[in-house]
Image (cartoon, rainbow, N blue to C red; front, side, top):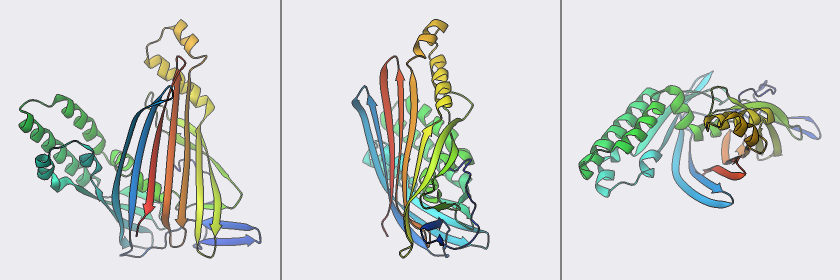
Length: 315
């Protein structure tokens, strides 16, 4: 989310600076020690709507434990232990669930800089191997139970294996919640001075990334409790939205005349509205709420999708 952010880099190791009587600056810095640990409840919600009617709503929840396992002058190493949400999301018989119980949890080891911003996952090959073994065993056991090939399940698992087979895939998919936890670290914001920047979004319909116009707002700061709220908002760039519409229509195979007619009214919008509540000293999130709304209007039929995540400190 921080691609292209043009802001002041961290220049001191203070949690806040009072420059003028009415000016408050908050620097997001990690003041952690080996052995520090926190538990978070993570809730994911997905809603899909078509022409004003909800067509799908899914939700899931798990508890993740974050622990500092190493600290040097220039970096931290952390462990994120969590429930294997892929396994828990599948409809399994009690017998099959029991046989796959050894895959019920994951441990992700990763690194940050000295100020706490994410730099990379360390054990991605181990995580990828574990997930591949689980998927293969799941297919085999399903075939034993049913007595027939599980072609649909195989194709689904193959697509997931492609993601879990790379460092980038694991960082983008399996670590998405962690990326939100570390999002503010390494930046500094001033009360009542929004920071404008350009964000890049993945493009499912073409090779060129989509640009978003984003901003950061330090909404509140309590310099006694060392607590603050940072708001992050984003809207897809208008020019890129038009380009994305054209790419979608071309994927639909429309002829030139049909294309010219559709493009007059077709619309795609993407909005982010994210709220980060932190103890900026020692650098621990209390509650993170992220929401992305994606709207598409083709042939005057509007559909939209809302993806939400809530990450709450429990202890």
